[in-house]
Image (cartoon, rainbow, N blue to C red; front, top):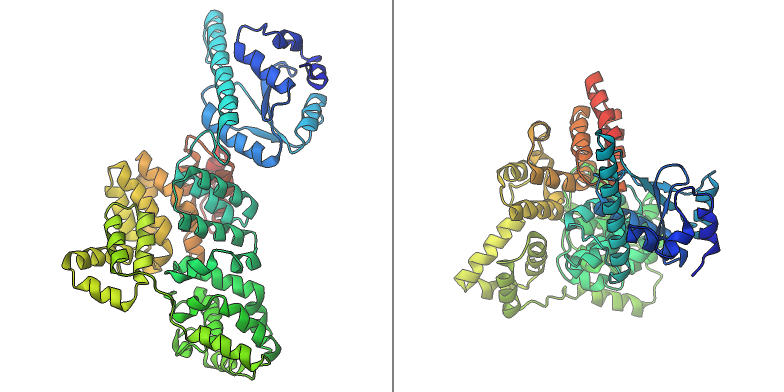
Amino acid sequence: MCADWLKNYYAKDKYLDYDKAMVGGYGIPQMNTLIQQAAALRMPCIVPSTRKRKTVFYALAENAKSLEELRRILTAALGSADTTPDIKSIFQSDDDGEQLLLEKSPDGILAFDFLPVPYGSPQQVKEWQIARMKRVYAMLQLVMDLYRQRPILHSLVSRQTGRILRDFYTACHARDGKIAEQYLEELRGNQALSSLNLLFLELQGMAASARWGEILNHPRLEVLLRGRVPERIQRLLLRSSGHLMLNAIRDAHFPLDRRDDARRLVLGLLPLYKHKPRFAHQASFRPDWQLWTMGAALLGIDEWQTATPLLETDWIQQVEGWATGASSLPASVEAEEQVLIQAPVIMLINLENATDLLLEALLADAERESEIYAQLAAMPEATRQALEKIPKLWETWQALKNRCEPQDYGWSRWLEDLQQATESERFESLRQQATVHYMDWTPSTFSETQWQALLEQQSNAQLSKVLRDVLPTFLNWLEEYDVQVSASLWPDWLMLLAVEDIRSEEDVRLGGMILDKFLSGTFTREEYASAIESVAML
């Protein structure tokens, strides 16, 4: 098939001949195939070019999402031995050839080229160049073939779950819900996480896009609320109710005409208010406690006034007066609401269910183990009593409980365990543990000196990988608990990111976040030079 646009593109290329490639005339067969596929506009496609007197490879795709996926695949597949590891994105150009490519790939094109070969004799250099060219063209053709054969939602390179989660949490931390959704799709295709964990991530990604109404109307929310909801998701749901309505009511000093609307809103989250949350009693969590007490007061939950010492008496009295005011709802509607409020939380776990879950927990990873614990923690008292009569099962339940809710565990013990780990399974277990439980770890378990010492001395590749993967959640923990650290901690984090073999755009974004934190503190000239060097490497 003859494509005039590509023929016109190669008309100004002195070294690559379009007609020769179309009849398979080049000795490297993949060179012919790539140009033929580009001529047929089989997206995505690779267009090799020597118009700039050096070989440049351009990648085209049908949309921005496919282009970004292709970037990740090419970065992972090509590495940094033969081609430039930094694949450029081009969205506009003064070059007429690149303008022509942008007409076919309007959401942008990617560009990368060969790295210089080592010094040697002219014959050696020529041999190295030919061998490198064959390797790169073969890999590019393999990437294109496998990309087109892949199942929907599956990438060619199946990245490790921890690596994808790092990018996901970084995008969420940057409030970039659109990019977070792309990583969530990759996680769904990865098939390494349970449907419940994916739901938690979906809600976090929606929060990054400020989709508060969609969160509170999620079709699976009712099922989610039947079990034990992790604290981070409790806060997310409460904050969604705040952004949607309750913050404005609080800031307007509780107007009575918004009371019924607010009551209907919190009714949809009723199980959240049935039990007092375990949020930390410190100033950074005061807004969360306010949102919970407003909902609990509207629903008539007992003892909401004494849930936390953070709330002032005057404020509690304002909420009390607002929540107990006269309702404009018909009596029949109020009666129906009262029946809902007084109904017990649905508990579906019987002894047989509990036994099956405990047996599964014996072989589960940290993330699945956390889900099992959440389900069992919500079992009714009758099931709990029946379980206690079976010593082995009760012992297993207590051990699971201690693992998932250890009172004295936190960052300090976690770092000690990380330093003592030797097996890859143990490193992965610790990564999962931090990802699942980090918000349960109090500031008293955090030692900046301990972190600094580890970052300065660590050389274990698996340990470094775990630290990089938990960095976005660590940043989130610092902000949530309002923990301040000195600027001297951040250059070592930047260097840890910079020395990774394969980096993504999210690593650059993560590095930018860390640099902002560093520059907002007090630092030495040497620390500044180290930070800038690491950012340049990123």
